[in-house]
Structure formats: C-alpha cells, structure tokens
Image (cartoon, rainbow, N blue to C red):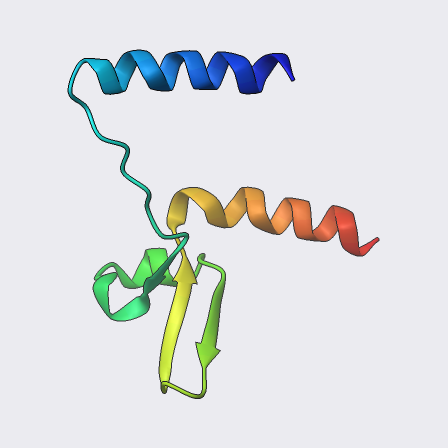
Length: 73
C-alpha cells in the first residue's frame, strides 16, 4: 500500500532524528477523568474481573461509536 510505505518512510526519518514512538492505550480508567461533564459523554464499560470502569480516550469515543454504529446496521 502506498500509505504504508509513506508511514514507514516518515517513521524512519523521525526515528533517525532521535524521537521514539509512543503508543498510547485506547482506554483509560475513569478515575483519572476529573470532569464529571466529560464523563457522561464518554463510551464507558465495566471490567467486572478487576472491578473497575474504563472509558475510551475522549478523542476516540465519538469516532469509535460512529464506526460501531455503521457496522451494527
């Protein structure tokens, strides 16, 4: 794919300048989100095995829900 080759080229260039790739998790524990108004808009779910509530990162929630809705139709 053209975009994959471009990604590899850009990635190689950035790494050659001393930068390291940072891979972020898509989910965050809700206890780290302080804003109650924001919490009500996030896509959240409960991990019953570990007894905690997780949420998609705010920047992923909306697009993830849209894609999920498209695939559920």
